[in-house]
Image (tube, rainbow, N blue to C red):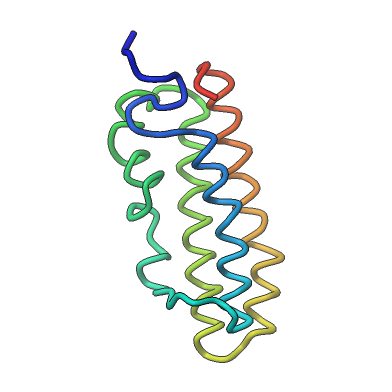
Length: 129
């Protein structure tokens, strides 16, 4: 066993990853409303391998947990989360705030919930929560 804290197995903190995905909704709401101070790039956000969790899922996480039955579900949910976040940004960028909000409450929210649930489940089942 490594000297790393349990929640930091191969570079990921499961709790922090859940929190980061919770905060994305606030970032997207602010972006849609024009109250945020950041410019989000739909193309960049839409790909799941740029964020810390995505890098982990496509790297060390796959090596460490790839054979765990929960891992493919987490990968799938995370890819969906980013694809939907990118779509929310695209709609906001074109001025279609209503469609962006609809997507945020619908498909994006469903994917986000799956990411958080799968992270929690993987963390609990592997003792890395």
